[in-house]
Length: 342
Image 1 (cartoon, rainbow, N blue to C red):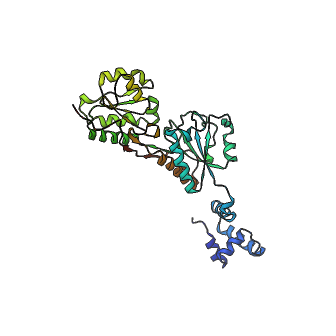
Image 2: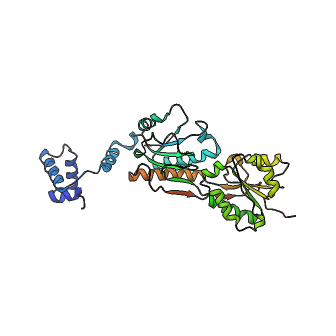
Image 3: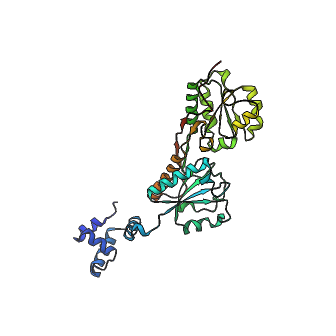
């Protein structure tokens, strides 16, 4: 049945909508008798105040300039408290999130969960004291300290890039399968015919195995003789020499900055002997060829997800969490020039 509105009450009582609203809010300019008459009609017609509209009107009446913006927490387990602001492979996420949050009238509050300042049993009270309404969980692996301590139902939530095994968080990240498709398109254009993938197992798992899946899918377009087995190991540097000797790739796709150093330690030159493509270009590998995953856009999208949930009053974990993927873009670089076949 349709809920009664202020307009319905106004028609029934032959009053203006503003008078009915003032009576329901017990404004002094409305007589006690009129207030009582409006309240009785509201009860009779089943009218109920919308708490969210009441909260919004109260906020608007106090004046935006006199109130602090609601906070979104940036929850991370980085090695140091400031890693998400200083490390090139992480800082872009936070910069994009802060910029988007500012546009929408929110503030980002980075919280380093490795700090003794934030023991698990204090998190709920810390969030409440700081006015935190939304959570962006970054690079988490479940089970973690949030499992049994956080009151998820009080917060709008999302996870960001590299989060593994979460209990039901909407997720924003890069689209690894598309990255491999883009890389192969450009490698073939540049004249490479025997690409190899070197990847740490943890990194691959953190990307939902999209990197190895994308590589294997793209590899199908190559002749069988040119299909090189993936080197997937968290100790891949110790296996690199044997793998390269056995398979002789003309280009290596990697996610580790030290890859070129390891290749050079084998007496090989980059890019003359073997080219290199990076899966996650940032300023620490400036000039390399590879994929810019657009970290700023990923951070911005995470804020969009959380604020959309806040606007809908949709808090807590989801039985059917949504995943949003941002497509990276190819960047030319000195590590992978056009190949000249002798």
